[in-house]
Length: 280
Image (cartoon, rainbow, N blue to C red; front, side):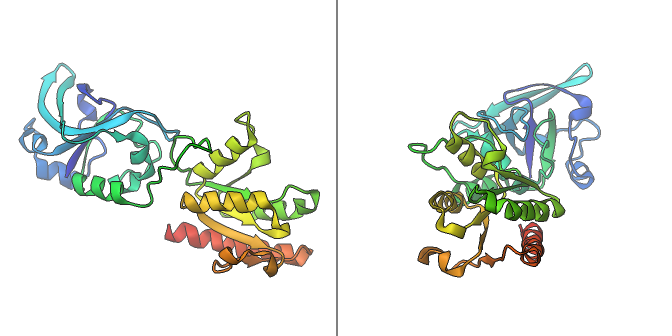
């Protein structure tokens, strides 16, 4: 087990009703804190971090121990001692792996409180640090942002020509029917450079849909970025011979632009999206 101290990265005053908030009842019972006995609680390792929302943060979390918990009016004074032998952890790494810490809510790190999680903190941190899912890409050529993945975001990379408008509409409908949000680079304008917007979308995306039709070089480049970031990708094409050799080993949804063909695309794409949501 470990303490997760949110909103007090160096310790401080915590309202009494926030102590053990979000902690399972059986853990409270095991730790026997009901009568103000914090002996067992103080034995646990502690992960301390500032409040942070799902948009991410450049702050860090610290591993250490709670050295003292003393009453102070309607609050407790928590004294936190960091472990100098453990490097600070970027908060964005915690956000990107929040399920590993049993924090399911996107705003789970946004409320000041002390929770106890029935998880081996050191083992979890070690696994995250060695996991290939934590990507630290070079920023020499591309402006990768900070922040976590948006679990509801599907990004589409495809040619922008007017002849692809019915395809885009079919894709949007399939994504919305799956209960997800759909964006394409031409639907946003956050940065001065369109490439920065594209990279930002790929960084935040949970799923990336790429259309290989017409051998669009930009789409292939963006597909490579998505693969490097480890995003779940769903490739589409109108013609099988438009798939480059290096991508032919990946299953691709082939579609036609007739009304019937686009309806079939919506059904097949919707099924693929739901499969990803069930298994990831």
